[in-house]
Length: 313
Image 1 (cartoon, rainbow, N blue to C red):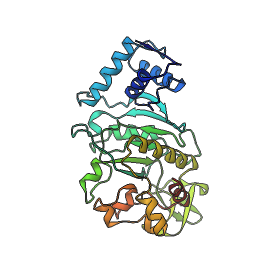
Image 2: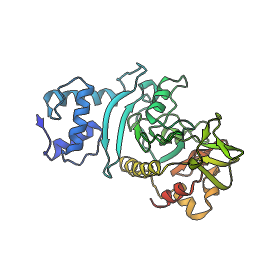
Image 3: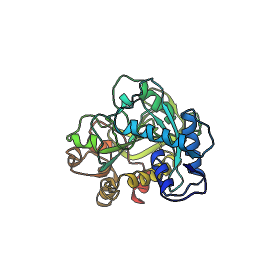
């Protein structure tokens, strides 16, 4: 076998599926980059060409993952390169150890997508690293989207990290009324500090770090007990929109017109983002946020720009 840039057809599609990238059958620059990243991660000759050796490694690698025999518990993120979606969004694959997400329950069809925020710092790679090293077990989300730091660093703003393969899941909701939601949902975290409090003319997060005024979102009334929140960035919201499109292509059972987008058409944004008993019971599918299924959560809040983005899907 020798498949390289410029080639098209079924062989290219198979290689793209093994790499976990969009399988359009066209071996372009993105596919070559993904091949090179895979070769580098496996200690192969990095030439971007799929010969017999690279192909055999791809087969072995994906077989290990799909049958649950692959074990990785070294405490380090597994760098599997990156890929671009149809809309041009780059997704960095930095997989958690296999004991940090659920592989022993088989694969599941996803019918719901949940949006969260981390209540933490701006770097999605560090967020994934922290999940990998904590002692909470298999608690994580599949995706994390970086933000702007409180000091104004935008290096990770809008950067998307994928933390485990599509067919599996992790616990990301806590106690809810339906176990089905855990096993049949995709989770996305936005790096964001969450609610803020005001002291004089200044704003602080829950660990008493001052937040610049330009990063503060003030609401017209309290949402889950708070007027002020750390603002989602434009880059985050754009990445979130493009990521939703990619997730729905992978999981067509997720209807992006249901859940929050539907509720926003039929009620005010504060009510739509609030607790919904039917969502808690697992009776609402589509796109939801943590606040729809938990009264004690503040992720996510009804930022007008997030509302408008969801309405544009």
